[in-house]
Image (cartoon, rainbow, N blue to C red; front, side, top):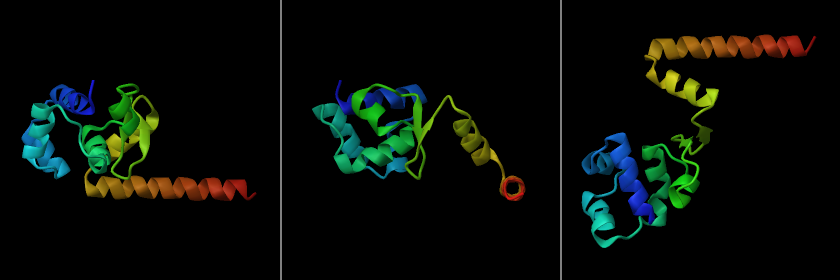
Length: 119
C-alpha cells in the first residue's frame, strides 16, 4: 500500500473530508486529489504535518505498522494507550481557567517533591 492510500484510509476512519484535511495541513486540495488520482505519495516535507493532523506516528504512516501512537504538535510521539495521551487530550479539552489551575497543581506537586527529595 502506498502512503497516500494510508492517508485516505485514515481520513475515512476519522470522518475527515479532503477539504478539512487540506485546511488543517495547508496542503492544497488539488495536491491531495493528485495523490489519489495519480497514485503517488505526498512529498517528504509534508509527512510531519500529515502525521500531526491524522494523529499517527511517521513510522506508522510510512510502514502501516504501529498506528497506536499519536504525534503531538511538538512532534512528540505518545502511545495512545498510555496515561500521557489521556492527560494531553484531557488538558486540551479544558478551558483556560482550568488549564491554569491544573498547571498550578502540577507546579505545587513538583515543588513538594523537590523539597521532599532535599530532606
